[in-house]
Image (cartoon, one colour):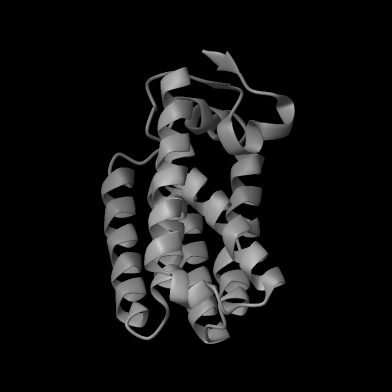
Length: 181
């Protein structure tokens, strides 16, 4: 296990395995390259500040998709319950992404509010025996909403909205390592 510097605890927990860090890094680089190529026409015309914001959101969201599934991050948020509530509340990325990618703010608000409400419900029932099944169903419904609206938004934005819903509702809200204290 690698001890994570305190500054990065909110992202990676207090400890991570080398293999988890490698997989997270490879995923970020691979998905970033694919998005850069496949969505190039969608982000190349944005103002430089909006490009920067979009790519910073990509790093945060794509990294969290996998980091929140790791034992280190999962146990960290299990042991710091109030930080889990803060994590849920501050994840307003769909609203910021809507601005950065010139997507209707309504779309970002719908994704954010849906995800926020579902994450609150999932956090409240975190110790219930069907928690992961409910999380899977709410995540799937969220992905359905993203797919529907994704028909009218750029591929790059739609992909980040998809990653966001998965990150917050399934990767983060499910206690994947409940027997591993």
